[in-house]
Every structure is written in structure tokens, then in C-alpha cells.
Image 1 (cartoon, rainbow, N blue to C red):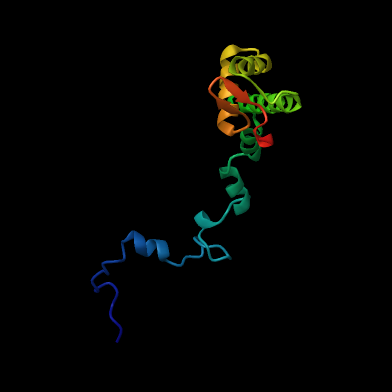
Image 2: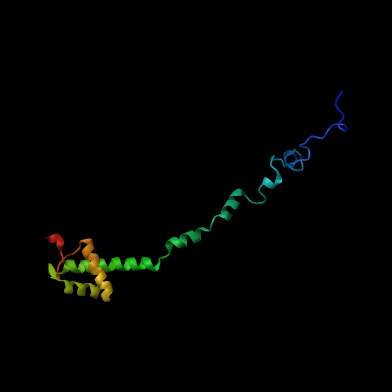
Amino acid sequence: MPPNPDTMAPDPGDDSMFRRFFQRNPTNFSSSGLPDILRPRRESMLQRLKETMPPVERLRSSEDELTVADAKKILRVLQIEKLKAKLRSSSKNRVLYDEFVELCVEECLNRDQGLELAKALDHSGDVIVLGNVVFLKPQQG
């Protein structure tokens, strides 16, 4: 004879949230077998993921922007290349340091930048500075 449910002690898991959550009830589950809370509503999961990603325009715009520092670097490279071409086309192989600095200042239109340009050419090996003499074409020996 089966036990009487009214006289049985209640199962300790009967009132728990765990048991209620996993209880198979047709109102809690759809035909797909997933609870309603886990099913996407009116939009695909891909759409939800796209919404969480930042817009592509914002990402691209930060890469395409030219900062002031970048513009200064480009200007400096152009000044150096222009001065190097001017020095290569010169008929002189060597000049005094003061004359070399004046050539650099003419290119930059600023004495401080001209001095920096002269130092950069010396450090890069495009010219050789020995004392008060600057060799403009060190590759010719």
C-alpha cells in the first residue's frame, strides 16, 4: 500500500527556490525548452551584442585625427628633408659652424628651432661637426 501524502513528513527541498526554479511547468517553459527569461525578446542576440560595442565611427575617428604633436613631427621631418636637399645641392663641402646654423635658421625661421635642427643633423650623421667646421657631405669623404 502506498504511503498517504497527508501523513508524510514534508521533503526539506519542497519549499526551496532551487526546486521551484527547476520544476518543469508548461507555463514556465516555451516550446524551445528555455525559460522565458533566458529567451531573447524581439531582437537577436547579435543585435544585443552590437549595442554593447562602441560605435565604429568613434573608433575610426580617433585613429584618423591628426594631433598637434603629430603635425609638429611631420613639419620637422619636412624641414630636415628640405635642408638636407639644400645641403646636397650646395657646391661647398664644408662651411663654418655659424654659417651652417644660419642655413638651419633660414629653413625654420626661428633661431631656437634652427639650432635644434642643426643638432639633429649632426646626431643623425647627415653632417659632421668637428669644432668650428661642418662637413656638409660626409658620404663624399
